[in-house]
Length: 260
Ligand SMILES: C[S@@+](CC[C@H](N)C(=O)[O-])C[C@H]1O[C@@H](n2cnc3c(N)ncnc32)[C@H](O)[C@@H]1O
Image (cartoon, rainbow, N blue to C red; front, side):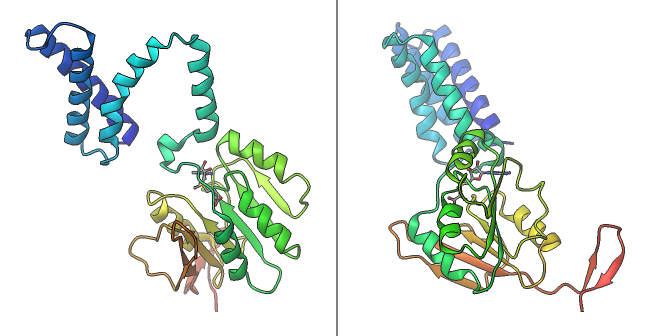
């Protein structure tokens, strides 16, 4: 079950439990006992639904904070504005389970060192605001770069910031809808959730000898050829996978041919 659906069900279960407790007369009168029992019920329901551990404090805090916020007497437009702002930044994170956070400068320097000393075509899948590409494009004007980003907010920021760099292509699209065969180096900083699908696509489309580098999240059940530990505060680890020679490939016309 998708985590967002579990969260919704947990909140509904919390309200049903709180209302049932109120009807039986078990709860003291007043709003806050009802709110507290809803929060507790939602947290228990989330645990029963096997939500990730960090959902529990969110469920415990959600309704108490929502009720407290009503006391601030803010105009509804503020809530709508905050919702739209978060929507533009996180967009389909509830589905992809990949939020926005950016590679730091030390990681960008480590990636620049991993680039071969010849012109390469580099793809950042889920490129955020393009900050990594901006750094790399300045360091390596001989290479070409492409970033794909789904969320409109970060994409728009990247569009503005990357405007003066002709060797960077910037697209608003799903990383799985693009063909990766045109690139020598594919960089991913996503989450554990899509890594099996990323590996499957890399195996199907990337050319032998090209590199897939994942920041922080290894491909499940496949050992990286190389690990790079970045000397930064979050102790970033890069997992480097070299795409192996395939025995046979199927090209666009479904014709089988050998690589060798
Ligand atoms: C952790 S950020 C990494 C940003 C950038 N690559 C960096 O290292 O600074 C991951 C980004 O991937 C984007 N993303 C997640 N799933 C995506 C998808 N299916 N297609 C395109 N972008 C996606 C998210 O919107 C988010 O901005």
